[in-house]
Length: 101
Image 1 (spheres, one colour):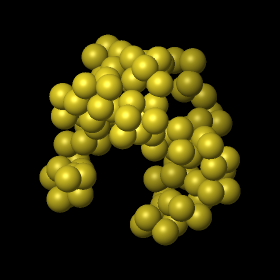
Image 2 (tube, one colour; image 1 turned 180 degrees about the horizontal axis):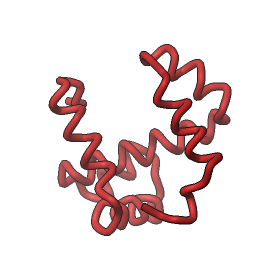
Image 3 (cartoon, one colour; image 1 turned 180 degrees about the vertical axis):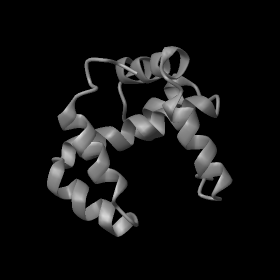
Image 4 (spheres, one colour; image 1 turned 60 degrees about the horizontal axis):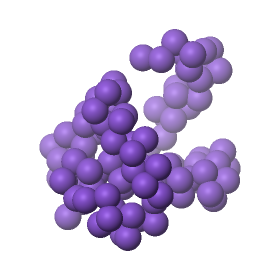
């Protein structure tokens, strides 16, 4: 875990996120806390990571998501050298039958 982000304020935010009960509550909260562009950027990176794990090419990913090759490369670096957070979530989505087709 990156020590730079481990702060009391981030802990408080994450605790707040963990209280959300369903997708509607997530929409309500994230629409308030994020700008539309911030939320779309987060979802784009998540889709890029998912597609990279499905062995899609950078070209396919860029065409489908609109992500730049720089964004795709940054996400790929996180997948290869990060904390395995994406993979943890992808595994749980699969286990819960919520993996994207």
